[in-house]
Length: 468
Ligand code: ATP
Ligand code: MG
Image 1: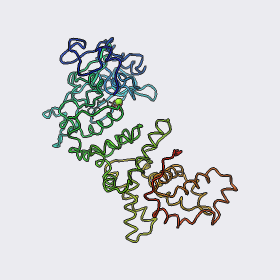
Image 2: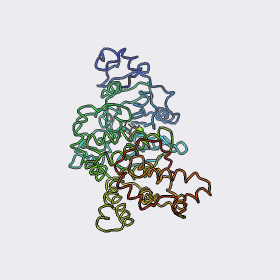
Image 3: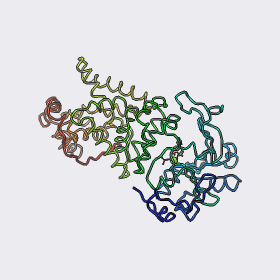
Image 4: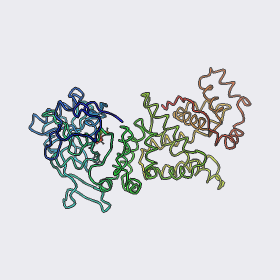
């Protein structure tokens, strides 16, 4: 658990249960206010652009605060992904104050203040859900479909998701305002929904995914009450637009914590809402497949992110759905469809089904298809074919995929080794390697794979996954 120096400083304790009331924070309309000297968030940590926006709003007579993830991350000593500003100025008023301002959003109207190509997002305080209000549309499931009523800071706070995401840094006096016990939850390492968890998940089911994401990313625990409704409400995610789920998928799986996200989503019964066929296959898995393959793919991509190497959504999606493609292709093959069209049909069906849940862009689907369809070509090692494969734009990704299959015992590792050598060999050696008889008969290899390699788990080897 993360122990925060500033809590120790202000509270003189490490046990969050033992927060004495008479010490600061000063109560103010139900809020606790941590003055400048009582927290560790300093202006030096805030981006110049965010500071400019905060100061300019202040000078124009408006309230302005940093809020959300940036306050949370700064208090934890982490670098924020971005800086979100909230104000009592309406979007139109914000537009008048800033020259380079664009208003965006239908569900929430927001202002983007541009600094070159970068921008700072500025939102107006919003009020909590009120079903009688015409500016709010609530679906019968409890989901909030439109929510555009402006409010005060005191109202804004209650419509935020988690206590640790509802801290406000006030640019007027540099204090941190805490209405919901967020500081205490930060110190205890707890992700806790504000208000009644079931109602809050119903209002916006994506909060279930966000709960997992923040728990994983911050190394926090999900509060017991916030955990309880998860599995039961998982199917509410079906009502979320697939494009929004793609955004969440990227944040969950491509931020360096993919493996933990996967494990936690499965643990709470949410993975199936995102990847129904993959979940079905995982439930029916035998002898560790396909889970091992997925785990290795996620580990690999987490490691690449840690090493600042690029990762691509298509590679992970291809890995997550590989078993679905294979199962379907095998069904087709059993129905006497030849292997190549069987795989093509399977790939199309799996992609079609998956985009109903997670709308990845077309080019991502095409790249997934390439990675899958190139797999068969690694078994062809004579004549010109290996040379042609090397020049394919998706060779790298397909080979990394093949390496993962070899590592997890799905294909003969000797073939993967052959390709490693072949890629780096001199021309004359490459010609030798591709002579008939030099590589073993590919048909036999494929037979070997299904006989011997499907369930043979090899020791993990570092792979040089580099997709581009
Ligand atoms: P990250 O580090 O991933 O950016 P974040 O907390 O800043 O984390 P954002 O998605 O950028 O997350 O949202 C900014 C803030 O807006 C959150 O901290 C939270 O207060 C509020 N928020 C975002 N999404 C929701 C939601 N679905 N329901 C309620 N509040 C939300
Ligand atoms: Mg953010």
